[in-house]
Image (cartoon, rainbow, N blue to C red; front, side, top):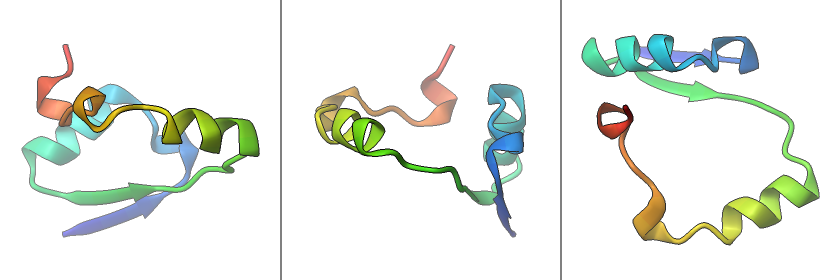
Length: 54
């Protein structure tokens, strides 16, 4: 199952529910240049799966 939504679904409990139910999801949001640069500077080792988020 797939889910595509906007920032209204950006809520950790909802995202964990999707993970638990094996629902693949994409959340769209506006990406401003400052955010894009910040994301690019995050090292790969810092990214975690949702099931590892407290």
